[in-house]
Structure formats: C-alpha cells, structure tokens
Amino acid sequence: MDEPRAVVAGVGAAPEALGGERGRRALGPLVLVVSGVLSVQWGAAVAVLLMPRAGVVGVVTLRLVLAALVLLVICRPRVRGHSRADWGTVLFFGAVLAAMNLLFYQAADRIPLGAAVTLEVLGPLALSVIVSRRLGNLLWAGLALGGVLLLSGGGFDRLDPVGAAFALAAGAMWATYIIFSARVGQRFPQADGLALAMAFGALLSLPLGILEAGSKLLVPSTIGLGLLVALMSSVLPYTLELLALRRLPAPTFAILMSIEPAIAAMAGFLVLHQSLTFTDALAIALVIAASIGAVRTQAGRRAEVRAERDAAREKLTAARKAGNDAAPTGQESGLK
Image (cartoon, rainbow, N blue to C red; front, top):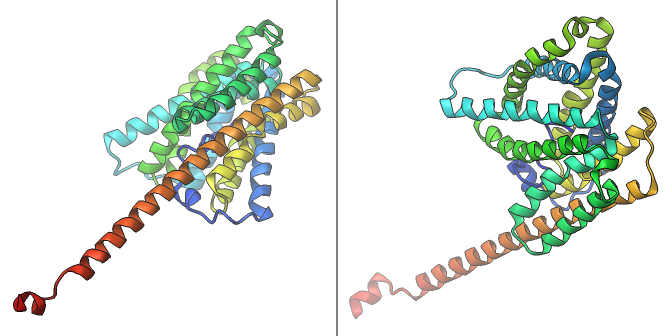
C-alpha cells in the first residue's frame, strides 16, 4: 500500500487526470502504473522480511523517516506562507498516513500479504460505493463481501482475527487518506503537501520505533533495507504514478490499481513463500472484480452528469441566441 494511490476510488484525482484524453491507451502509462504496483507490493514483502530485525513499528519508522528525507530533498517544500487551516490539513494528513502504515504492517505481520491487501482495499471500495450513490454499486459491494467471506473461510479465525481487524482498519485509514489527499493537493503545490505530511508522520512514529527497536534502527544493513522499502513503497511508485496520471484518465488508473491484491499475493508467494489456495485466489478475484465494477460505475455516472451538464449548456446557449435573434433592433423599435 502506498501514498500515491489517492485516486483509487476515483476521489481526489488531479483535474488534469480527469480531463485528459480519454481515448489515449498508449502502452507507456500502463507500464508505469503496473510497475508502481509491483514496486509497492515487493516493497511490502521486503518490509515483512525486515520485521524480525527491527519489529513492525521499527520498520514503519524506517520507511516513513527515510521516505520523508528523500521527498524533502527532492521537493524542497516551502514552509512559509501557509495558513493555519493549511497546516491543520497537512498535519492531519500526516497522522492518517502514519496510522495507515502502522495498521497495515501490523496486519502483514499476522496474515498473508495478499489477504491483508485484499481486506485493505475494502476501504477505498466502500468510499467509491458511497460517493457514487448508485444502487448498482450495492451489487459490487455484495460481490466484495462474498470475496471477503470466502477469503476468511466463513470465519476470520482462519486468518487471525487481529490481523484481519488491522487490515480493515488500514482500509478505513486509506479511505480517509484519499479524501484528505485531495484537500492537501488543493492547498499545496505539486508534492509539497505529501512531503510535509510524510515528515510529520515520521515524527509521530519515531518515538514508537525507538521504543520498540532502539539501537537496532542504527544497524547499517537494517538502514539499507529500510531505505529499499522507502524507495520501493513510497518514492518510486509515487514518481511512476505521477507520470502515468498525466496521460491516463483517473478511472483507468483506478481500475489498474485494483490489481493490487493479486500482485500482493504473488509477492507473498514468491518472496515470503506464503501459500495461496484456489479458494484464496477466487476470493481475491472477486474483490478485484468488485473494485473494477465500482470504478466503472462511478466513471459512467460522471459521464452521465457531464453529458447532462453539456446538454443543459447547449440548450441555454440556443435559447439566448434565439432571444437575441427575436429582439427588435433600435430602428425597428423607433418605427413602432
């Protein structure tokens, strides 16, 4: 999971992404998005491997601190000239960011990576259903629920109920992150808001990481792996997805992001040697299908609203033109 995925539910997307050339389907942007997803999930797998060395909170601290340092150097955000409301938004955003990572890594420490991401995706999926306000999306919500029940085997005790609860809580934080990502993007230029929020999240997690891991955080090999996690899970995917969003419509981007549970399951299998049964694969497929369906439904609703707005504008323009044509000229008025 990662910060750049603020448009997964089609909420908070950059205006240029929503208004881009929807017919363009070049291979380049798709490769960028898939590469970003692969980077995120392989980074998560590396983080799980690092947990025995530094602990869950220690790994989160390393990731946030190192990612914040890299982003601050790259973005060099301006800290002056912002209002109190601006700072309140970005600080809350940073707190959500820290909580999202802490909850997700607690889940990944207890249940398979694919299952953790599948449960986490329910947060953005629920947000997409709520925002669309269409009865048809209840079908996708039901499909996702069926996938989750299938994944849990009828009871979350198969997965470890605590780990499942952490993953669901991370999903709620992800949905909150999506909402506040849009607000931060409106108040801060480029990636300045993300860099500042990441720095605040790192400050919040640093005492907890030191308390849990202590001097283990200073081991060079641990720092090296932590930097790898930060680059793979934050810096690299953010850059790739930012480039992709300049040439991809947000709905297409969101659909591509829906493959994350499958990529996570593959990373868990290849890197962590976590087993994946046919039932697990089917459950993940159902959640992915529900995510894609919800995004497409929401995109369809946007297209309908846009078409209605354009039709109303054309009708108003035609009425004004007709009124102008019917109005008498000054000479005609004088003759009357």
